[in-house]
Image (cartoon, rainbow, N blue to C red; front, side):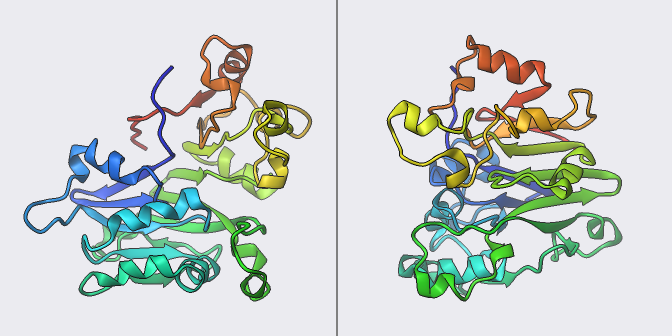
Length: 277
């Protein structure tokens, strides 16, 4: 079985300027195992120019703590996600220790923005991204008082990145599957999509939880309305499943579930994968 740590994706629009898509709890180990991301000495600065957050889930934001005191960071998120991280969790105030402190940017939904504002040449303007709404459920740890003030559409987003006629779609959490989401997947050259659970009752069947996949915010791969049923096997998009829970049988390459995923033209992510779009 191949090694798989928590999902972490790095996008490199230009040499020496990398953007993290979320910040996984395993980020420190992932940085140390990736020479191109290693901190320079004696400054401890890394090539990480910014982080784009798709939600306030622990798997998306815990790694920010590994970046404290490294350097000035640019963090891009919906206003609601920023409020959760900055106002609800005092521990993240350690990010303010950098000089100057971390800079947060509130990102509007469904708006194309340049990915790398430091290099606004004609070429870099083609590197653009947008956040598209995917779900309205916030993590359980968010207080009711704050939850009432947050926009439902900003809870969980997908990232669409484009340069010229090439497009990449990233959605590590997929609470619902809308026609708009399907269009983003099918119009992309590469997509990395939520493969957390194989079945709706996976956690209860394994005896490790009491909620269903959809109650936690993840469409299962199998069954009625499951992700595998929603796509044409002949789609041109290269499709990779990410954020796979350790209860998911597709991790066993000898299992029938693994074969069903592969027969449907999906790949299963593993540590060290790289893509060029």
